[in-house]
Structure formats: C-alpha cells, structure tokens
Length: 361
Image (cartoon, rainbow, N blue to C red; front, side, top):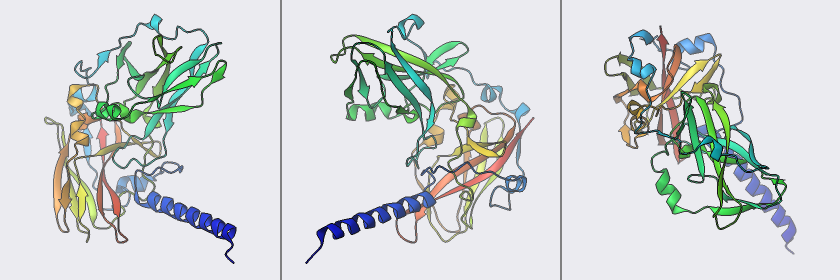
C-alpha cells in the first residue's frame, strides 16, 4: 500500500534541494545575483595587476587636464526641475510621520542594471484615524528629490519607467490608528541613477480611501559613494582565460576613454554599450553612480540597449565618456563590461571583463 504522507515529505525535500542548487548555480554565474558576502578586498599586487589579468599596464589620466565641466558638472534644467513643494506643506499632519528612511541593499537578480538598491522607510500613524497609502510604493505617489546648492530638485524618472507604471495599478492600503507599517522598500531603479548627496523621500498619504484629502510626508537621507559596494565577488572579474579588456587611450578633448575587448577564448559572446565604473577605496571596490545632473551626463551612452557579437579571435574597440559618471576624483578606477555566452550546460553564462586605470593630479 502506498504511503502518501511519506511520498509527500520526500517530494518536499527534493523540491527544496532543487531550489537550493538553482540558487547556488545562479550565484556562481550571474553577476547580478547579490549574495550577503562582503565586497572583495584586493591586495596592492592585485590592484596593480588588474585582478586576474597579469598583463595589465598602468594607465593614468591627469585630473588637471580634464574638462572642468566633467569634473564639476552644472545643473541641467532640462533634466532636473525644482521642487513643487513648499516646506510648510510637508509633514503637516500631527502624529503622522516617516521613520527609518535610508539606503538599503536589495538582494535580487539585476544583471542588466548595476544599481540594485532601494530606499527603506516606515509610516507611523499615531492618530485616532485610519491612514491610507498606495502599495507598492512607487511614482507618482512616491517622489525622490535631491538637494543641490541648498535647493531641492526632483530626480527625473528613468527612461521607460512611466510606461511600466501605466501597465499596472497600485492598491490602496489601510494603516490602522496608533499603528506603524512594516518596512517598505522603493526601488531606486525608478529614477535616474543617483549620485552622492542629500536626498529626501516624499510619500503621499490620505485620510480617506477616495484620495480627496492628500498629504505628503518627507524625510531626508544621504547617499554616499561608499554605500554602493561592488556586486562582483572576488575572482569573478577577468576570470575567463582568453577574454580581456585593455585601455588604449584617453582623449581629453572628446572625453573619450578608448578600450579594446579581445576574445582569444573558444566562446562566442554577446555584449553591448553598457559599462560600469567602480572606484577603489580603502581596500574595496564601489560602484560610481551614473551622472544625470548635467545634460552632458546623458545615460544613453552607458545603458543603450544594443547587442553585438564577438567571435573567437576577434577584438572590439569602443569608447566611453567619463562624464557619464560623477564625481570623478583622484584614485584608481575599474571599467567593466559584462559579456554573455552560451554555457556548456545550457543557458547563459555571464563574464565581467575589466581594465583598471588611475586618475592622478
């Protein structure tokens, strides 16, 4: 006679083992799969040699010879608009507030974007009335602003965000009197990648489900370069023999960092314009956020969705403008491209390849 209870327990065990194996496989092949491990620490020799690439040549760029607009970009009014909120119109509800606001790390698949972060927050309702707000938290009921030279500017939405938001509608959530919400996370991917500085999060709330009486809560928080840790584990960059990147020239006038990707391996790769820039600080690599403060920092040059093929024995030369990132200062940087190929066991495998350069005085 079949023991159905025993078979059910056996099936549960097999499914859990399969899920665990899948997660381990994803973590080993996908650079966008974030683990809880600490950022990689490089010794001095590893930094000079460019991780696993012993052929790395010391390439330097002079900060004093760079275009001042690249080092200190100006505000582009076509990208950033001043806030539409008066200070006395925010946080006017007694007993209703935001708390625990700050940058938080998201552990999820993000192979197409280097920024996998969110703003964490909690809503507190210390009144005798029920409070309403939308879920999930996202624009236009959630707004992100940055303080630049003492003025608040609304951070523009990332390209394609508005179309995505129109495809699905949020739901209204009720927060009972004298209660606090759980911690919520609003993905920074809704907005243009963020630079360092002082930000504030604005959340729209209502005292009735018909959304007639609308109020905005706000709370400030800071983003620092040190908050953007590398998403690559130790030994993951330049790990495939025969696949390499070399920086060949920096054109100061055109702000063009020329680099060559060479494929001497047996694999065929798919790649695009997308590049990531990291800075080496106190033994760690940190992502440098994309600059959209200035019109010359148009993100199209960094994230343009175009695919190319790199066959065995081929090399590809490309240029990327450093003005796409900000801030730039003296130090060691790592430029990385992510290439994909068909794996031996089927599916796609991802290979980050990089070259290191240094900005000097």
